[in-house]
Image (cartoon, rainbow, N blue to C red):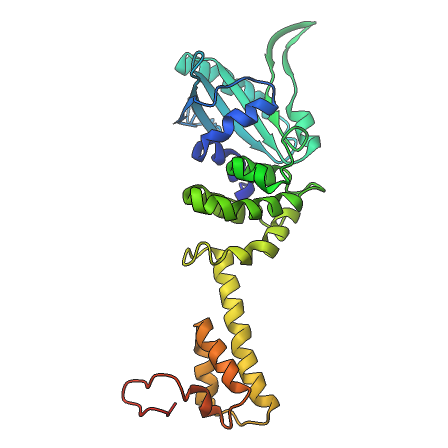
Length: 306
């Protein structure tokens, strides 16, 4: 099943190719930071009965060498037969584009990473005819970014680190570092800050890192108002519902009768500031109608009437 985490682990290379240089760096493969990166069709199907698609294929143009193709695969577990598909990708892409090909497999756990590193050999009787040797990025070699200043220097790489380590013991510290970095980056590069916020919201899901991100997410609602993300909407709806219940509960505790139209008006209100004002009045109101005494009169309603 294709999940948001699976998509994020390879699509980030399409959407924010600046992470290629630091990722290649931790893998020990030199790549200039000024390389050009262009998306290439991921369809490697030759005949209809057998459809094959690479997760992501990029054409990378280093400033200090020849162009090459980078196939990126997100792998959540060991998949028997996958090594055959990977060998096919190498052969097909090289034949089609006439360029060297590298395969980067991104994993979230060490066991999968150990398997994916191969190498995978094709041969018989002591002779190796073909060897597939993927590059593997995983919690084993990707940095754990727990310092806000470090995260701010490369926020996209920090977000990728959070996804790679989403189930690791260190997973909680990375979102905290990113939360601190967002305060700084939002001022200097709001586009990147927006991307990282959305990326983490979509990809971390119910992982331990995702739960941590949910805890600290409320501090960023004011940074990106009106974006309508799932968590932002849920957060605001929850706050509104809680505040409305507080207004009604305060009146009930003080023994003040609540007419049905008043209850309906309070529970249907979606403005947090208005509900806060009503709650303040509920602490001293003599009647339920006093909640609305200072509100502007509605069309066709005399001032002071609900």
